[in-house]
Length: 107
Image (cartoon, rainbow, N blue to C red):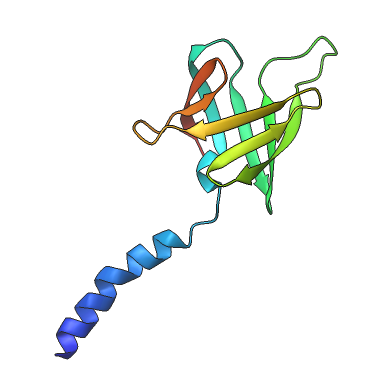
């Protein structure tokens, strides 16, 4: 009887811990363009705020950087002049943003 209980706990524990993963952690890391128009991205997370940095310099010589936050399963970024929504395709793990698809290359 004790063995059955211990086995049940051992099997259930990883499922419980997987459910505790913080919202949006799957967005963090370096993303490389697979298709579409746009730069590669680097996404960092500080508490509940995401910092998204593009890999291509703007005309100012700086790399565009903007903040985002989770809205359910969607990462919503405020680019100052527009709002951009990022989603992760559950079939292949790719990051989808308007006009572009990227793959996760490092965390």
